[in-house]
Amino acid sequence: MTKIIAITGKGGTGKTAITTLLMRQLTKSEKVVLAIDADPDTNLPETLGCEADRTIGDIKEYMMNERDNMPPDINKESIFESKIYETLNELPDYDLLVMGRPEGSGCYCYVNNLLRGIMDRLTENYDVVIMDMEAGLEHFSRKTIRNIDDLLVVTDGSRRGMRTAERISELVHELETDVRNIHVVANKVTEENKEQIQKTANELGLKLIGLVPTDEKIAERDLAGEALYDLPEDSKAVIEVERIAAKLGLQ
Image (cartoon, rainbow, N blue to C red; front, side, top):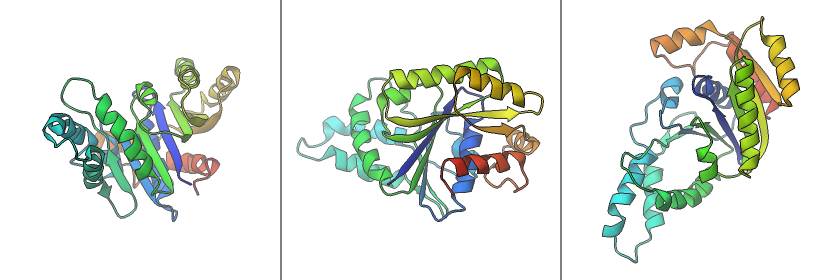
């Protein structure tokens, strides 16, 4: 059975960094892993230290532009699927798929419906699929990826940030999405606010799965535009994300 993990949260909370550090832990195992960058800003390849020059957004454009020119009896889903496999980046430790965004205007319901079935088949080829989601919840209503086992909501240490995590959790339930477990990850935590974060999480009824400390090594690499995937073992953030991975059964 494929385990599907999605990471979401407000912009600027560090969800892509958490995704990258979880990938770092996953690739130490014997698991076959697929990383999906579902954020239109497409930052995951950079933090992983790789490149992805084609996206599913490009293929959506192609299908929208060409569907009326295709013979009526041709299997459009098969064409779409073959092009998605061409876009898949097969790297030594994992595969990477970048969603991107279509450049044109108009409704993409047609290709989103095709994509839904294709993604169901694609994810079956992996032990673990981990997704860096865009901010907001529109992607959950589209249900491009279904049957999410664990949703990690990344937040900063402020009470306002924890309130946002609470609202995201409530909206996921209201949208009747296929999410089995919702966890909160507090990121950029300091010794001064650690206790208050735990107290606030308890008050709001949030399932706090990890407290990732502020890590200067991450800040330095972000400023330099360097990958986070190869952070050293003694990184405080790496150590805490390793604990989170263990709680999720990823080791």
